Image: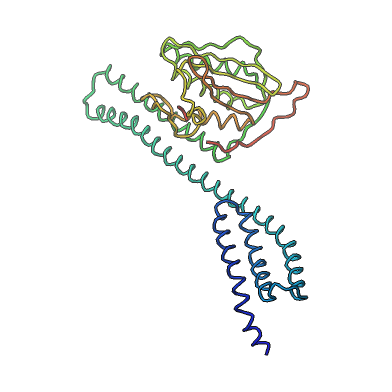
Length: 355
């Protein structure tokens, strides 16, 4: 008897519940690319509404104790499941966004690695080819005059130094990006770091006809590691000299403000396109202009500078300034001499060239 009753009401229940379920499925399909939270909430509500519609259809839209009990039960279930579904949907949405960002970051890193390998392979091939040609000429006796032999030896030495600089840049960048860099922090007078870097880079600048000036200012004392800060300043100066035309000027200035010390390097490169300003520190990014053939190093100076600055809990940025560019470094100020604690050790923040 009960089975016969079920057979009698089942078509009516299906007649009312199936359309609700179909409409709910269509709604969830439309919302699946918009709001995961709304889709999960609809996933919970649709079965409840479909069941309620079936009960209402079977009751003939007449108030009965069964209908009242069913409605009350559906309301209680919805009061519990809807908030739970919303919380679950938000959690799923956060996980999906995190996975999407992680995939995009991984793809960008993989593309950057491929570009770096292709770039470095190309740059290594040039000095290696020169060394091979010159050594073959010496070995075959094509060059035998003492003056020519000495000149070839100097050229081979120059190409060897260029290769060494490339390898050093790659090792330094590898330490930074892998988090293997460890800094011993202490009070470092910024004026001494800049003076030494200017003295070293002035040789290259004089050869090109570029003036390097350290502006008069109140040089601050920063909390950092002397060798790494010297590398940052030298990389910025080298980059500025490389892109400043002959008879141009590179100016270095420093000072302090409430939020820390600052160091600025102004060059006369003619400016960088606005779209490239945020990318000049990226590995394997060249921008609109390719690097000058024959320059030393692996072209990773700005990437290394950013990594070292961020390892000091600082910040570096580039902007167009006058007839050239301005690279600004922000670093934490050192405490007073009576407040200094023993040197600390800190790890580098993984980061990832020259323009």
